[in-house]
Length: 231
Image 1 (cartoon, one colour):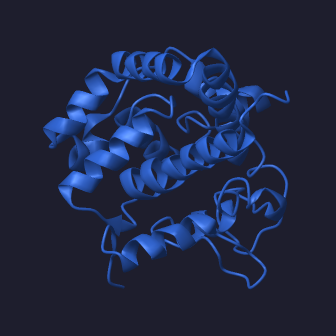
Image 2 (cartoon, helix red, strand yellow):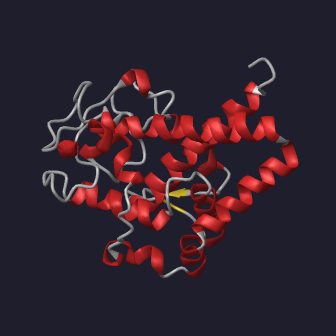
């Protein structure tokens, strides 16, 4: 434990959470901001390396989650199959089906199709490169542990933020906000706020809430990497 490079682990964890929150969720699922084609690829590559299946698969399933939020049989994140399913079972199952009609805006880009088709080999090559460049201890304590921590942190949004917490908006679903998780999820646990308006770039609504993903996105907008949509 004393040999673990803690600063690298924390940075790697936060980068992974940000790429899922800002990249996969807010951009590829909901398009709450705009990217040029180059930075779109960079976000997609980073999201692909987060090991939460391909961007296409993640976006298709999450869009179904919002589309069928009140249909427990069709909602892929549904609690109907139990807490474990809503937490991690939905992403570990063998369901590789993707409704291409729901991601027409994504499959028109050949580079994104490439990342989707070669998802596994890209991650194997990256993991091998990390091990080769930084050694076994860094690979296990930073790459592996950081990945698993990021997994379960983000999966808590599915498993807990539809069960416990407070509700700012009377949405038709059972989404909730969990303030205690908002720092480690970079604002994703403000889930009821998100469900009230999925296209809102900032999940913060109340003064006491913090959405660090939006803070980072705002900084990126100042240096012209991203552009927020006009209201």
